[in-house]
Image 1 (cartoon, rainbow, N blue to C red):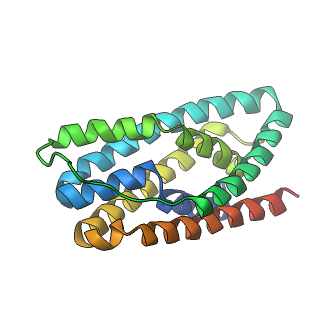
Image 2 (tube, helix red, strand yellow):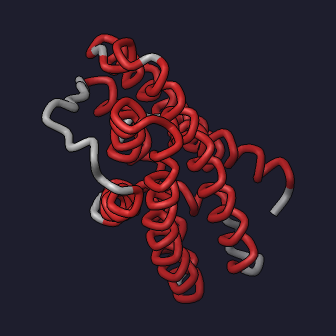
Length: 205
């Protein structure tokens, strides 16, 4: 994998991690309620859950490349369409954060387990990875090194972004909870998803 391809993926992974989703909501709510130190366990849990999805996607894509180059190309185009669709959905989405009646006495272990389940039970994560990974994989080169690079990059970036959200939420609770702010974030990252999809479509063409 060339440095240029990797840097392009870094940008896409940053957009993916920053975009409001279940992991983002989990990190923000934990940061507001428990503070950044206790919320570290939840960040680790989120990454463990995502790592499981990455392994599943990697195994599936590796098998697909081995069986059919045409099917792999089709997946790439479907991925482009999904990114554009996801951007449109983000534009229309209105998110709010509710943290009332939260038990503040929960342990770090409990936060960890909850976070693992958040990512494991979120089908959007695995669908997004299926849409994104093929755009940056060269089917003519060994698959495992490429998938390892993409997977590790995803986990490191997502951990950093979730840490950013946790720290931000612990300091600016009222501002982060604003429905207006969440709506603006959805529209910003919705536009970015549409842009990524359009750029990848041009590259495929």
